View 1: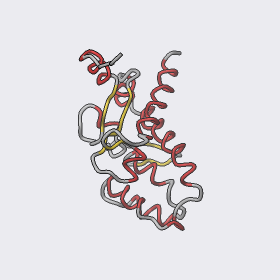
View 2 (view 1 turned 30 degrees about the vertical axis):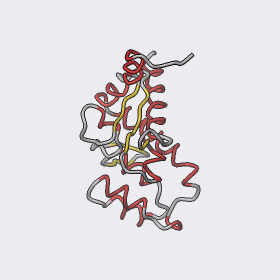
View 3 (view 1 turned 60 degrees about the vertical axis):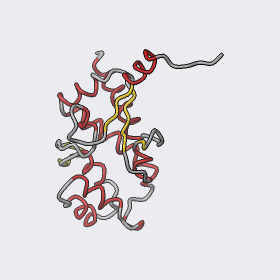
View 4 (view 1 turned 90 degrees about the vertical axis):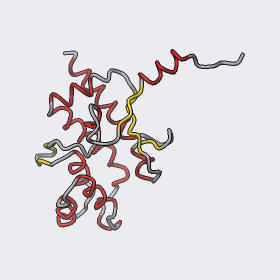
Length: 168
């Protein structure tokens, strides 16, 4: 039997997936780590969740300060991606997802308006949808439907945690 998707199935599928990328896009730009909203994490106030995440990558305080001094969240990310291996926290590749999850939980717990936007996505699949194919975009998001989409996965985990907290 030759199965074809009906227009209702395609529409239903599209409604169950929310794609985001740029921090200035309404309403889902808030899911971007570059979205400008202060996050208090580990007792420190950071300008964005990207700042809070990347602060954990640097092994040395002076390198961390250099990264965080970048004039924009995207430049913070670029600076951190360019670190020498000896400047990166040991086991970063094993701990980075736990750190991102904790940063996201802080971000969406500290801001009622952001939490509402995340919770209002229901059970939709969240996808960071990048356009440039590189290792970072393929790990944290998807490019042309391919990639690990770890930012989306972690956002969905945080959403589930917040949904459970709201039930009590």
